Image (cartoon, rainbow, N blue to C red; front, side):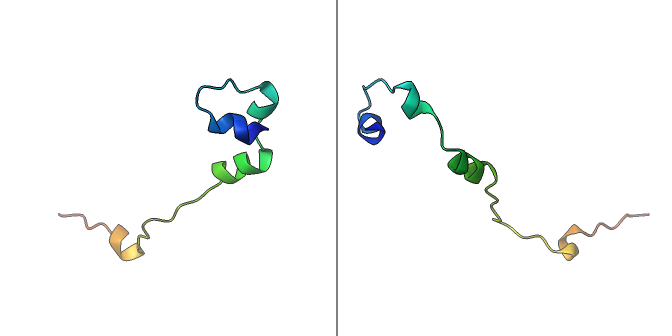
Length: 49
């Protein structure tokens, strides 16, 4: 029922359809994206004297 209501952009969503799935929420919150890896060599800083 909820999926049919959500597919209609003009429909009002009942409260029971608004309740989020705890597992899906945790998965989205804990999602880690490793887009770029930085080596220690890239992190070295040299101080000019």
